[in-house]
Image (cartoon, rainbow, N blue to C red; front, side, top):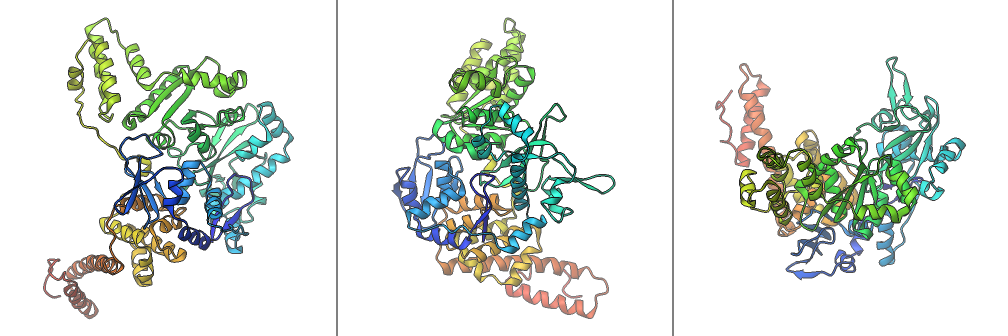
Length: 603
């Protein structure tokens, strides 16, 4: 069964059986689902359209009826009918499932977790379960904390907004979570960033006497927390440390709640704090997100660009704010496609989004957004400020400082425009600026960092992943012995886990396989492979099985070569080693790899 948190943190945990999701996907036609929102045209075996998730003139958005999967070869967006509704309509996972089920006359079963799954979460063995359970606890504690409620009311927050963002309260005290998790010593509590161990080997809660903001990923999973002190203590904000499920440089606070508003507005505002996001939402500006105590990264920008055509970074107007904005500019430049726009809003002195929106309202804040300088204006103004344009040396320094900014940019219309403005400031011809900055005229399409797996798997592992994602029924043909062999090799662990997931789910299509792997530890890798297989020519089952056998034969051959090389180094081999040497050589000959290893003919 598949554990799913509710679409809003704070609602009790329930379960949607995996079998139901697979049954639903077998009844839903992704072509019909997408075509209701984006008009598709047939192109061979697939359907195409201009991508709804980024601005383009030539269709690169492809939908496969046979594989029940979509993939954009421009921006990298991909998924099933479920994922399309989540991305396009801003729905949570559960709401997307319900909408699809209603369309085909199915009722979504919401049942209590199996006892084993509940015990796993209570024992602290499942990080997502542990974090969700902690979120429920903090939310319940808020109702019993008048001081915390009064603080939120003074900040102008309503109960509905607190509920929407799952805001809670961590009581004062060193071991409050012990009442929530009977096994307070469970490793996962520390792995999830909820407890620490001191020098005396005693455990204590990390969050104490703080307003708690659950950090939720785009799939609706609680992955961490931000805690704000009620008074004047330090640190003012305390964030969950890096954990196996939480990486600050990849996540944005409030994105889960803001997706529908972002899609509607065509704009996303990036602010610096949790309270800024919540306060803006309270006043009707619901398309704001925040970085999590870290500078803007390329992964942040990539996520933002997939959500909207206009990204506005909002900072304080002091020197620290300008430095933060410049960092965001540097991360944005390589990903600026034509049709995308980045702006930088610097608030008046002494103001932050929270205070300003309470004073001026949504209309006042949005007026500032509309007038915010564009990336090109901010970049050229800031570079000009750093030099003396009245001197030749200053103008030369302007071009010199612009070079590392221009080089990573794709060679599109925006870069051409910036070069022309820069050339005018430097009193040079645009061609001279291009030559001095070593700019290539080609439009370089860079892959989205968020869509790229962190570690590229071995070529043979990639081959097996593609085979299994495109033909999930093949998982049943792999023996337990073969799967265990894969599990023992770090390069093939992702393949072994995929086999288990496909067997458990009973997936029969690429789309079903994608949903079966959505919450796995290798989900990003599987998603990337799924996108790569969309345009692969569909082989029949017999050919796919033959390819699978060939891949396993290569895998076995490689292992035998390694073993043969090891045995050949033995100076005084035992009788068993001699026998094994001959056995390995015979098997290699059967596989056609007998001459692949240069070893002594006998030992």
